Length: 234
Image (cartoon, rainbow, N blue to C red; front, side):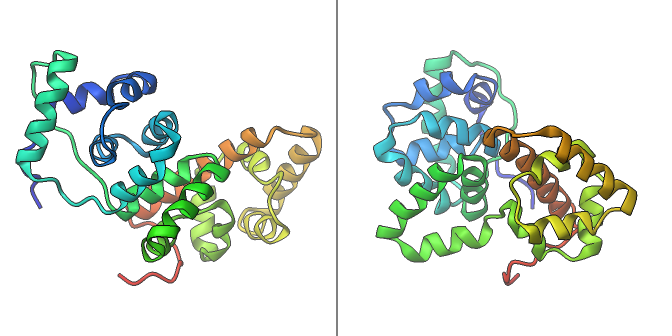
């Protein structure tokens, strides 16, 4: 489907800003407006900006993002006019808007786990059905066990063995067995040696390595190369 005309020069300018600048630009906006801006950012950037917004409205922003539908051109034009005045953007360039359940799930996946969980708990008090739908779209490192062996082999062809060793440091025995069983015996021995030589690691480093593998999973799924078995219907 061809994209609708979107005057998003100001949005392009926002994409190129530092996360702190974006947060400052939208700090006084309503949750719906913030969600609209976040829908133009990649998940990792959107998660950073969301983490800098007021704590008391973050769950509302995620809720609006999850229920965001393609925005009417008039609403985008109005927002762009405001943003253009603030950023001084004159040129026009094309950008894609996301939003919806997958977008909200991707942003939450990119956030620190406890923060993501607390936001879902807050939303669940108002809209438990929405939280269930978001969670169906979320994918965690432990969910890799739901992928067929052939899919795991395809994923791990794109993962550095040291990165895999880091990701597995705090993983369950189930996930270790699934991933090490999807690579050659020699590669599995190399990963085991790496893990034993690493010593204690910071949790943030382990989660960063796991997130890189999750990003590979998302990319390969979007390209149709693997299927994620999460009990979803098409």
